[in-house]
Amino acid sequence: MKGLIEDVKVKKLNVIPDERGYLMECFRSDWPTFKKFGQAYITMGYPNVVKAWHYHKIQTDNFICIKGNAKVVLCDNRKDSSTYKKINEFFIGEKNPILLTIPNHVWHGFKAIGGKEAVILNCPTELYNYDNPDEYRLPYNAKEIGYDWEIKMG
Image (cartoon, rainbow, N blue to C red; front, top):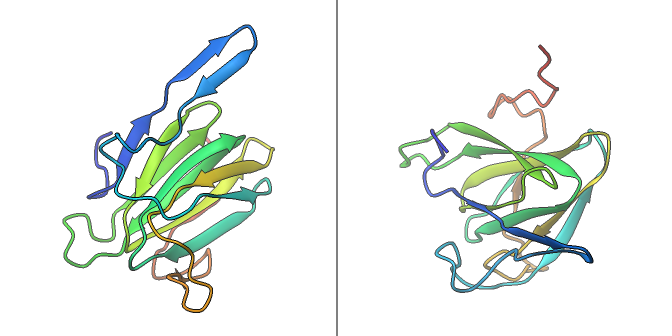
């Protein structure tokens, strides 16, 4: 992908169908994108609801949309990065099965698209710390980022 935010990784996932259904490997410890395993969790978004913005200071996220389709948007928050303030959009899910690796200090959020809910599996590098969460948030319409979540017609 051209113009990718520094350290963001995209891996096309292989869907292996047969007459019974299909199998798709989501995340393997022998892939170059694997750093370490913290935990796995699922987050779900209702159609056209924006779940944004947040970033982590320590954690790297590994997103796979396992049901439906989602628009995932990233904004580089790292002042020393060559892609500082750059925005990337990804359309992931049943129509485009990919693993999206989101480095720390990169703002991210998602919105279910296509009129159905989107279910995202995340395999972050860190355990969630209930007492001191590694999460820093802004509202979805934050002026600091300046991203318009509306559908682009035409």
